[in-house]
Structures are given as structure tokens and as C-alpha cells.
Length: 121
Image (cartoon, rainbow, N blue to C red; front, side, top):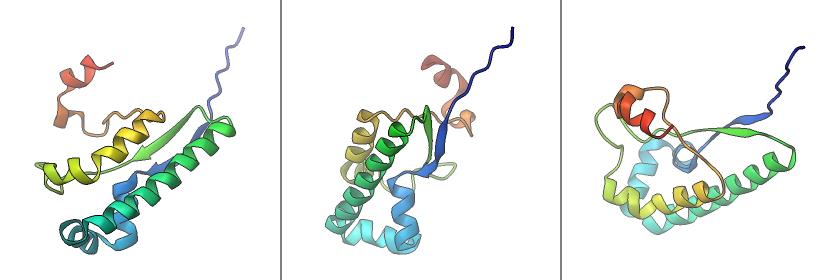
């Protein structure tokens, strides 16, 4: 007897921060974060709405999972001040998690500590 498991996985998508910095170019987006918070919040809302619709579409076509990618930092620190991150971006991440996104950093487990990662599994 042969067991066959098939999973349908949606294409890798970027999360809001990556999409916004590609749209605006990184250096412009960092200036926006510092000087144009309201515009950043508007753009973030538009991008999150688009991602939520994409998640729904993948669900409708039967995807078992969707791969997302986001990069918030260097080897030593976040790309932006943590206080600014909480103010501008944390709400959208919370929302995306509520609609079913689970996240796990696997490409550099040594940054979080393998033991810490294992605790959540």
C-alpha cells in the first residue's frame, strides 16, 4: 500500500513592510516612516487589505498553506526603532495573524536560539 499526501501551497508573498519598501524604494520609505506617518499608515492599510484578499483567494482555491516572507532587521537590530514598529506596523501583523497567518523564523534559527524555537513547537 502506498500512501500519497498532496498539499497545495500558495506562492510566496511578501508581508506589508517588504511590499511598501519595494513600492517606495527603501530610502524613501524610511524617510516616510520618520516624516509621513499618516501616509505610511494609509499605504499599510491598503497593502494589508490586498494581502487579506489574497489569503481569502488562496483559501477558496484550496491552498493548504501560503508562504510569506518579511525581513525586519540586520544581524544586530531592527531596521527601525522598536517603538515606531509597534506604533505603525504591529497592528497589521496582529490582524494578519488573526486571519490565520502563523509565523516561524527558520532561515537563521541561531538568531533566536534553537531552544527558544523548539519551545513553541
